Amino acid sequence: RAERRRQAAMNAAAFAECAAQWRRLQAAHSSGGLAADETASWRRVSNRPELRLVLEPPERVRKMPPGSFGAMGTSGLQPTELRAVAHALAVAEPTGAAAQRFIGLLRQRVASLPDYEGGEGVVPPPLAPPPPVTVTSAPPPPPPPPQPPSPTSSEQTAGAAPSDARSA
Image (cartoon, rainbow, N blue to C red; front, side, top):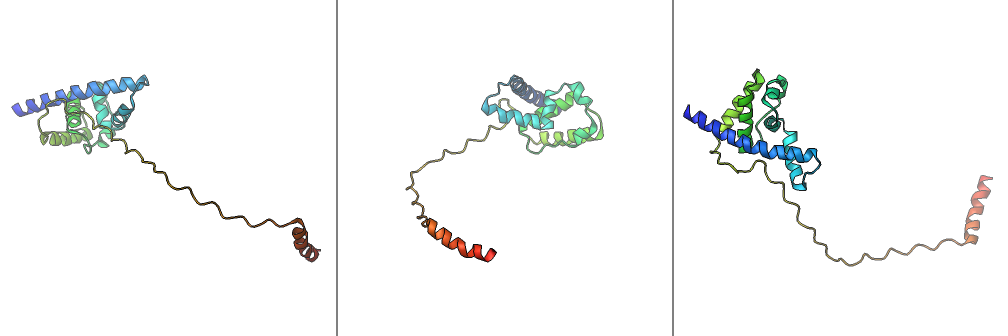
């Protein structure tokens, strides 16, 4: 019982951290003011239905269709994100078999996590930019081969006469 309360407190702290950062990203996205390095983080949050649970009011989570929980999973979620989603669902208390299955899956994963100490980072940092391409000066390409001489006007008429005679 004490362990469950301790886990719930860590989950609530993770939820507060994630919700604050993601709401800031959401506001920046709405106003068109996302920095380049924040775009990937916002895209990740907005594309993962599990993470969007943290941004939704509990009433809305409770009223979600059962099928939406069936499509959710924990693969690829960071420890802080797992705890935040677990807290969002604990507060919302959704019903239905799919929601309960997902909550059970979250509880298993959260129980195996190290203690949450805060400030552990909510989303992984964006990938490092590729290394700069080094341009070396290469020798210029060789000149194109010479073009064959164009036929003179007398060669063109001489060559055209036999074919005209055959076709006539």
